[in-house]
Image (cartoon, rainbow, N blue to C red; front, top):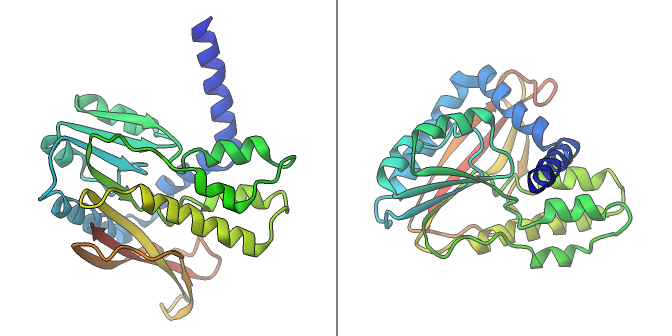
Length: 260
């Protein structure tokens, strides 16, 4: 009976994630990577190198990776060799990732909502119950107190996107309220990152370019103050050069990595 209940719960959770767009988005990432591989190489290499640099003065017990995804920008083998335990934390773990970690005995996947429960909250509340933006401040993901090193892996700028895209379907919030929610979600994520134990990597700005690489628009992606940190680095991620993310325009992201 317990096994049956677990099976039913897993099916319901999968249906929820499909309905909210999380499964489609994750599959879209790997498809875009295959199309843009030559343009992504520098971004992925910069991310991995910065993470390794950030590990240098950290205790080598448990490493937690928030937003592990497809592991494209994570030096997993190196981290597995350095740390006693590596925990990959994400809402969905691709089957390819689950297969990959089987050979690494000290690496495990944890399925979790890094917003601390907002995915379930909005899915189960809307459209009947309207959640006030201020209520989001009480939702935080709880890291284990024994975590020695935390990697926020290009998730700060993304946490709100699919969640608020789902919320927008119901037309119950103003643009100001949606912007407030975005800020609160970003603030809440920064608040859970422990000082002197964190490597934060995030896109902070989106550049929109024409086919001749002339900038025709710039959008900020982060609406909170980022920590100054012990050291940091910036680079550009040529996210979409084939103009499939936006019609008739390329999309590049300006990325920042911070050790703090």
